[in-house]
Image: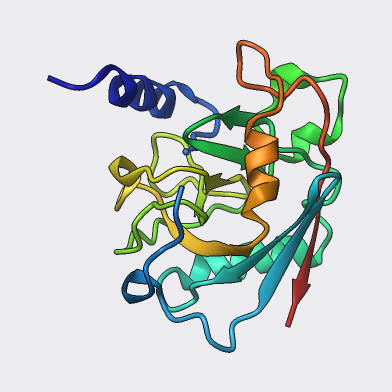
Length: 196
């Protein structure tokens, strides 16, 4: 029999028809993919900065897509539009740049899609993974940062990076007051820059 918490998470994973997501401890050194010489991204928010390293050996097309969008300014002015304490924070939807249309949050993205690159990186705290619809090959721009180990997502979502500094920022974001749709009641806009 499934636990109520797992059932709730599974329901949360299943309910995001437009852009499924996705939700304490860093990866042990033995489980960390190699990220040497890979570009990094800095996600700036009003709560501080998060530094992300990428896993191009595990998800090359997802890393390429994220870096391309970040360099173009695509993510700047977006918010983390879905926060679930004990699980994850989700962002990257260009629709969130318009505060007057919250009903469209979770549905936006670029026209290009990225094919799934499921891999052996476990969805532990700090992992950055790609949101998608029920179609495994529907990833676009939306991503999520896991704030608590969520291994039931393993090999179902593409993990492509890890927050190596600033997880306390994600903790503040995930604990912001939110409405019934898990949308924070205050905006915390992001700017993402890539450091080569």
